[in-house]
Length: 51
Image 1 (tube, rainbow, N blue to C red):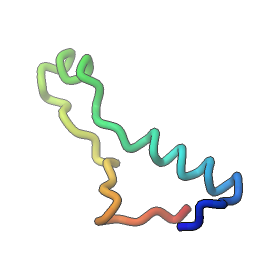
Image 2 (cartoon, rainbow, N blue to C red):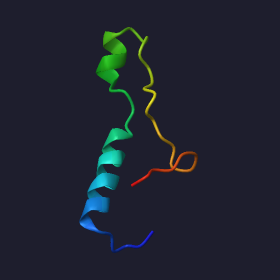
Image 3 (cartoon, one colour):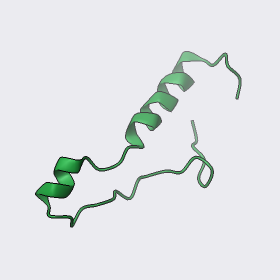
């Protein structure tokens, strides 16, 4: 990917990066381990973004 990106694309990529986080530990503890993963986790090599 080019290092010079349009601002809109950069913002979309940044949003996708923020969304691609694990479930916080306090949530795992609060739900006693029932909630461990969220279905929207994205691995960069497996599924590509439409950004």
